[in-house]
Length: 115
Length: 111
Image 1 (cartoon, each protein chain N blue to C red):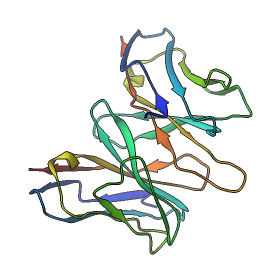
Image 2 (image 1 turned 180 degrees about the vertical axis):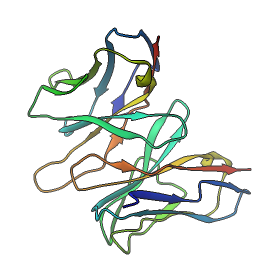
Image 3 (image 1 turned 60 degrees about the vertical axis):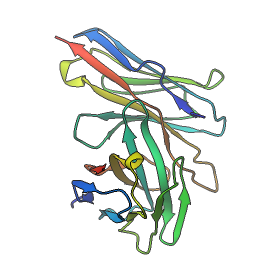
């Protein structure tokens, strides 16, 4: 049973336009969400995160939105650049107040930014 | 500061053989984890540890053992390799509750 879902295996976007990557989760205990980017033959690298006490977090061209009631988050990349072409993973964990739980990843979305 | 290192980079095993994938970090992170990446499946958590002497199972722990005797090292042992364990394995570390730093991966083929 997948706790973190990314229902679009791939996405193609024109350079300069907005890329929107979506992620859904099922575990209501999750309170910390992260996005990672992965190039072929490399390990994933951290991109941006959001705590459940917020509904938006921005870092340059990257913005993550969180809708807790829908158990949904999205990553917006504006403007998209060819170097953004990579696999993007959504991840979630339950940080809690007294304990820290495992980090679960989604299956990933492969983004292609077309020049 | 090397970050997270993994050895070997590539490995071919025959069915039934055992081996240990090494992972080390020099950032004094409490949390360490092992994932496997398979096409269409994303990154699936095998085992994780929140500190020396503490380990727990992830989503796909069967066929793998771990131990955490020091903060720095978190080896992953395959007791009797099977073709289903052919995958790319990533080790990661982080301070508790923060983003993880990943190693470069080990590509394992079991024939």
